Image (cartoon, rainbow, N blue to C red; front, top):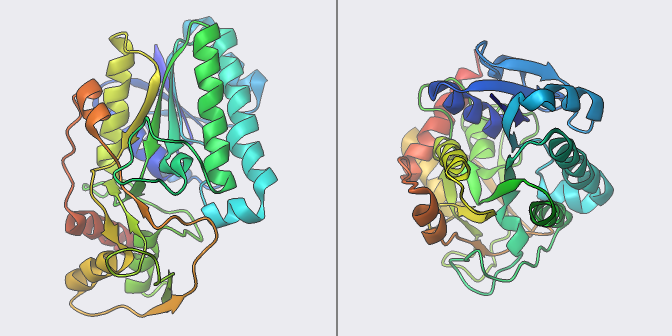
Amino acid sequence: MAILVTGGAGYIGSHMVLKLLELGEEVVVVDNLSTGRRELVPAAARLVVADIADGAIVGDLLKGGAVECVIHFAGSIVVPDSVSDPLGYYLNNTAKSRSLIESCVKAGVGKFIFSSTAAVYGSPERVPVEETDVLSPINPYGRSKLMTEWMLQDCAAAYPIRYAALRYFNVAGADPAGRSGQASPKATHLIKTACEVATGKRTQMSIFGTDYPTRDGTCVRDYIHVTDLADAHAAALTYLRDGGASGAFNCGYGRGYSVLEVIASLNRLLGREIHVERAGRRAGDPAMLVAGTQKIRDAFAWRPQYEDLDFIVKTALQWERSLEV
């Protein structure tokens, strides 16, 4: 039986495909290539260029028990864009996820791993934030993901399907072997943007907000290396195979770094300072997001390998330099 990976030609999805292939799994990728890149899908995986909402194509892939588990990455992820285009986000992240879940239920797929987000917590009342804390997203991106979590919870109660919703904090870095990394155009992630400035693809970058109630006035985030995140998904697959109960799990390291600390890390690697400008706050950005990680460490026996911020930034920079060729 295969593992079907939606969005497997994208940043996080492509790292997941690499991990699954390393584990000897049969992998099918469904990606409409709107932001993903065909060349990030290894030849050993089967790529089907399609939209996850195409019930006929997805249903055909799932029929006859051909797929054991769906790992769902496909969707839109830029918080400011969700504020300006909420309907687009509810279409891509919620309505299309509903279609995919329905296809799984109809085909009898019993396992589902969902790419959720720490944005479901909004501006948390405490840090680190735990899975049992209040879910109160402050932007359409977070709401669109939370709606999908609710759908999975309801479906797990009604049908023979179990799920793991992995709530990512800030994903960063690139495959240490240089096989994949973040390559989407017009990226807004801090480390990606900073590396583009470092390699001359941008002339400068903005720091959005310097008056937050944090140690240096800039936003604090829990940055998780993308390879560790792929490992967490692999651990979730094992967990579900072993009969683990459905639920949500934070994916982070349990400590945060500010925007200025991330930029300082890059500057150390470069031996010079990149050009940054200070700007006002962006809509929908909480001051601090740091993961409580005890649940995932206990349930999955997951132990990250790449917690060092400098290493995360180093792999991102190496990948960015490889894109210059």
